[in-house]
Image (spheres, rainbow, N blue to C red):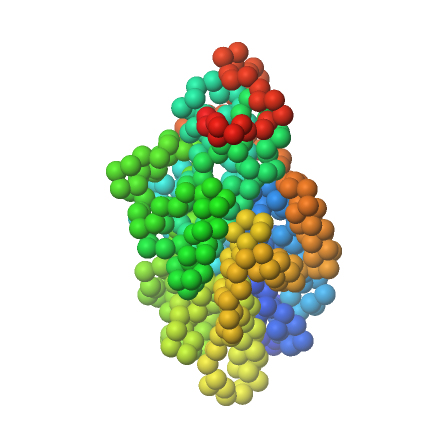
Length: 457
């Protein structure tokens, strides 16, 4: 029989928040001075700054730079209990959250469970084309990228070397653009002097976008600028062409096969199963349509926020970005307090749009603000300062700022560690431990400098 958590402070309203992302944390913070019992439940013990996950995936930052223990963040909030557990359902009739080992009673429930990659009916592609939503995803992608260069250094067959040094990114939203630009710079700059038998600058980066242009959520001028900037970095962009097949050998695009050892998925997201837990209808992306106060229809004491919710503000969909989740979390925290105090408030949630951001390598970015657009070198610095500001904790801000400055002036990537055991889709060890360099492999490139003839592998 699962254990049931009981409240020792009798009479205090019980609030369960599932998910310690931006929405969940900001909801908990808004309740910090209230006479309530808050339980924050997450499957991980850390809060993750997702906008910089791609930096971990491309060896720019260590995981500890963008993740912090939830207990540490909330340790001074005495009305909060943090539990690390996995939710399996919600019993709305009894007012309980069901986990693997317990049932948590609630008076008010906030589901802020985020999203996961969407493969549009081809979940089997997940094995070959991982998405980027967690620390585990980022470290696994980092391992794949770095291993591709290591294996290419030992490979004697030219065709196989080309496959190993080909990187395909599916999806040209901000995450896809950031991954493509950073991998290009990793190959062209940070790794350029590290190898002797290959020239890392011969790496091929291909971005595939099914829609008509990159950064579809941005304006057409920003999209055109981004396309030019990616071209200057050597990224091949295929627009208006969707992926029709994906295997461990690469991808198929409208009948054309692109052989690649590394395929990364940034083409879309779907909500985590909050709708299934509640037994309510969802939209095509699995998000729960919510009322103007972010509560679930017919369940006024249950709120869904962030990527798990289909939210509109002033007649327009609210994007699934960190500022929106923070605003929703703060709003829901205040709405719960009003309900507890018996204060009527019909004011709906209103999203304040602070703009769209996307970086393209280390010298260019696109920032669309309500009052105008910034592009180029200056935008990159604004983007960096903005992200540092939103990091949690003074130490994290200082460390990341110093690390970025060092990388900027030295072209270094400080987290190029291959950890764990990387296997292919058949479960075989990708590294071939103990394998000696093939005597037929190409001779070392003196100084690892490319000739004027633009030699390709």
